[in-house]
Structure formats: C-alpha cells, structure tokens
Amino acid sequence: MTPLVSIIIPAYNAEKFIAQTILSAKSQTHRHKEIIVVDDGSSDRTFAIANEFAGPEVRIFRQTNKGASAARNKGFAESRGDYVQFLDADDLISSTKIEKQMIDAVVYGDRFIYGGKWKIFYQNPEEFVFSPNELWKDFMDPVDWLITSWTKQKWMHPSAWLTPRHLIEKAGPWDESLSLHDDGEFFCRILLQSKGVRFCREAESYYRKGIDNSLSSTFSEKAIGSHSRICQLYEKYLLQYTNSDKARKACATNYLAFYYTYYPEYKPLTRAAKEAAARLGLHRGAPQGTGLFYILKYILGWKLARRIEHAFHRKVHIRASIL
Image (cartoon, rainbow, N blue to C red; front, side, top):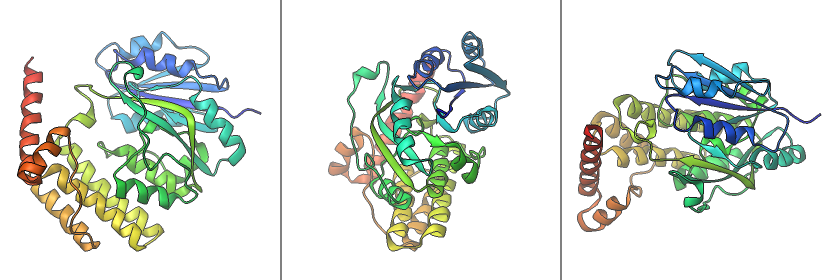
C-alpha cells in the first residue's frame, strides 16, 4: 500500500500566503496524502481563507495562540501519515517534492530522514537560483550531518525535510518553550534517532523571507533566550551521543556564532556563550553577517562593524514600524 504522507501547516496571521501554500500542498503528485492546517489564533482572515479549502483531503483546526511549535504538535496529533511534511504557512514546495522523496523512501526505508534542495525567495520562487552547500549530499551518519551543519554554519529549512513518523515519535514533540531556531532543536533530535540523511536533488522547496513580523527577523529578548538555550541543548544532545573532538568543536562553533551574532548586546548571554566555546576548546571563529557587515569588518574590525550593523537595522526597523 502507498504510504500516507501528512502535510502539516501551522499558520498565524498568514492571510497573504495561506491560500498559495495550501495549493502548493494540494498540487502534490504523491496522491496518498492528507493536509492539516492549524490556525494558531490568527487575528486576520487566515482561518477563513484556509477553511475555504476544507474537505476530505484538507482538515482545518483552530487553537488559541500558543506559537508555531504548539500548532505543529497539534497538527501531528491529528495526523495519521506514515511520513510527515512540515510546511510553514508562507513557504512553498514543488508539485513533485514529496513524490521524489517517497521514491527514495521506498528504496532506503524509514530509518532515514529525507532532505532536498531549497532556495530563498521573496515574492516568486523563480526570482532566485539554488545555492548548493556542504549539506546537499547523503550522510550515512547523522552525527556527520550535524557536525557539518554547525562547523560550516549551514542549515536546512523545515519544509525541505520529509520525516518518517516513527522517528518523530521516538524523538518527541516540538519544544513549545522555544521560539527562535526551534526547528534546529527539533530536527537535531530527529537526526540522532535516524540512520542518516538521504538527499534528493529533485525534491524542491522554497523558503520565503522579507516578512516584517516573522520571528526570524526579530531580536526579541525571548527569541535570543531561546537561541541561547538551543546552543546548550545542542551540546547536551550531541555530546551524549559522541564526545569526540569534532563534536566538541561543532558545539563550540555554535556558541561562538551566537556570541558574534549578538555582540555587543545581551551581555550575560553572549559572555556565557564565549566562555562555553572556550570550555570546549575553541577561542576564535569567523564572524558572519550581512553584506554591510563584511564590508565594514575589513575596514573597522568585526566589533565596530557589528555595532554599526545593529544600529543600521534597528533604525530601518523603527522607520518601517512608523510607516
């Protein structure tokens, strides 16, 4: 029997995008699927628009606002699929995305998690090209995937994955206390329950950026605290699995990336991150940032460049909120 795939869409104030995202899910050439939309207490027309698609294949749920992780957990609890596709309400997947990954799943089995190529877009996915990185390949050891991801500071956005249900059941639900980078924490646990990653180049997904109220575009106190805790959880999970030098360096790289990103603000958290990296044997890394940051870094040094970058983006954010 063809495996059932559950496409779970958490949605909050996504009236501009939700119809396009649901259509993206409905257009999947993998026929044996169910689509579950969980409206997380939206104050706009998200629920009403999503409800227009309700039917045998599409089920719509509504809950009070609890956050994206809680919406995903609700969707998973209501799902029946052998495999799960998480799809954020502003992201898209190609019509053959799930079919291509399921072809691999039939061959390699449900001990692997299945990844795919993805790209950033703002309005139209055709605007940008794919940018391959070190994660765009098979990994027969999940630890190798995590070490590569963290040392290279590369990632896979949630919609790129297709995950066997039993791996989610073993790893546990999304942590509803987390916000920023909650997907990284969740899939870290999934990966460590898996046999590895099978990468499917024909499976395409599209990650939308440029949304004013998106969590990933804000530096709230709660979000930064979440990121700090996730660095600690990464260390806990990986070093319980293997306490190798490479694993310790990868964890230290996460701490240093946190320090470089938020310097000179959030001083207790950035100081703690720098100390944690040193404890793990890494005292220096490569600060990353926007194009503005890289230009200024070579002229003024990374610390002053970061201060200017933060001031610039804060000014732009305040101006946008006024307008």
